[in-house]
Length: 558
Image (cartoon, one colour):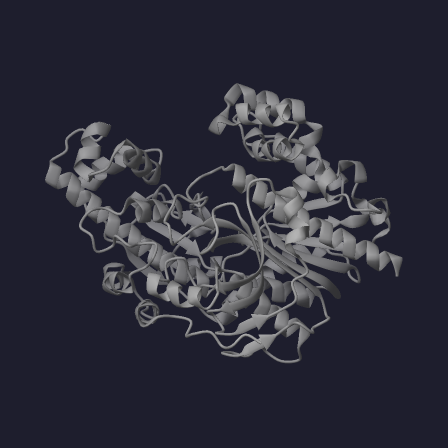
C-alpha cells in the first residue's frame, strides 16, 4: 500500500490561504493590495516573475483569460452565492449585464460601470479567483509603470509598445490578446490610472453552497425519471453529444463549406490533409470542433436550436445552466439513442441492443474544485441506482506533454488531505486505439490542488519525488463524495482511504494534459486548438462512452 505522502501544502501557500480567508471575513470591501505580499511570498509556479520589475506576460495572460473583457473598467468585485444575497446587499444583479471569460465557466454580472458580481459555487472559487485577481493587478501595474517610463504616446504602435514593455512581436500579440478586443482603449486608460481592486465576500457558508447545488439538481430532476439506472459523467457539454447525436456528421457538407470559407485557425487545409491521408478520426474531430463556430456564426441564431432538437429526438436532452448555476447538464436516454447516429468509434459489439436499456447518462460540464463534491452528492441523493461515475477533465502533467492522456489509480486530495486508492475502470488499452499523436499513461498518481496558483516549484518537487505526476482540481472532491455514497459515514480527513473494494458503482478517472508547469511551455489553457487537444479530448470521451455501453450491455445480458 502507498505510504502517506508529504504534507499537502507548503508554509508559503498556507500563509497565503490564511491571509485572504481572514481578510475576507470583513463585512466590507478588502483591497487586493492586502493580498499582494503573501502572493509574492508564495512564489507561485504560475507567477514566477511576480517579484521581477519586468512584466510577466504569461501570468498576466493566464489571469486575464479567466476574467471578463470588461475587467480593466472594474474596481469592485463582489462575491456571493445567490441572487437574493446580492439583492439584499444592494446589488440588483438581475438587471446587470451577463459577461463571460475565455478560461473559466463562472456566472458573472456587470453593472456597466465599476462593479462585477461573481457567483461562487464552492470555496474553490475563492481559492481560484483571489490569486487570479492579485496576479492581474500586480502585472497590470507593472505594465503601466513601463508605459509611463517609456513615455509612450501611441499605444497602437506595436513597435513602440514592444520596446516599452521589453518584448518581441509575439509578446505584443499575447499582451493584446490578454487585454481583449479593445486593447488600445485599455492601454490608454492604463496610462491614466493604476489598477486598485477591492473585493467583498457576501457569504461563503457551506450551507449556501449546498443550497445552490440543490437548486441546480431541482432544475435537472424533472428530466430524470425515477427508478432508472444512472451513469454519471463529468466531462464537457459537447463530446458525448457529438459522439451520440450525429448532427455534425449529418451536416458535414455544410460545416466543411463554412470551414473553407472562413478557415479559422487554419483548419481547412488540416481537414483536407486528414481526408487525403484517410485519417477519418482526425477529420471527424476537426468537424466536431468546427461545429461550435458554425453554430455561433453571425446570422445563424437558429442553428443551435436545430442541433438541440435533433439531439433530443435521439435521446439527448440539454439543460443549459440549470438553477442559474453555470454547470450545464445533459440527460441521455440510452433506449432512445439511434445506433446509426453513433460515431463508429463508440460502437461496441452488440450495440444494437442498447435500445433495450432503461438506463440514463447524466453528463455535466465539469465544475470547479469543491463544487464537484456538492454536484455529485446532489446527483447521488436524487437518483435510485447510480451504476457508474466517470470523471474526465484537464490536468497538468509533470512527466508528459500537452495532449497526453493520464489514467490514475491513486489521488491525493488537498481539500481533505486524504490519499484515495481505487480501481480505475479505464486503462491505456481503452484509449490508445484512438490516439495517433499523444501518449496514454495509466497507473499514474494524481494530486488534486486547491488552485492552479496555489502551488510552487518546491511544493511540486516534493510530490514529483513521491511519484505524483498529474495535477488537477476535481477528482479529490469527487472521490470524497464517492466515499460517502459507498460508506455509512462522512469522508475522513488526513487518511489513506481505499475505495478498491467498494462495489456500489464503477469508477473511471481520466485526464488529458493541458499544461506542463515544469517547462512553462505554451499550453492548451492559452491556445484554442491543437491536434493533440482534439485527439485527447475525444479519445477520453470515446473510452468513457465505450465503457458505459459495455457495462450496460453486460447488465442487459444478466
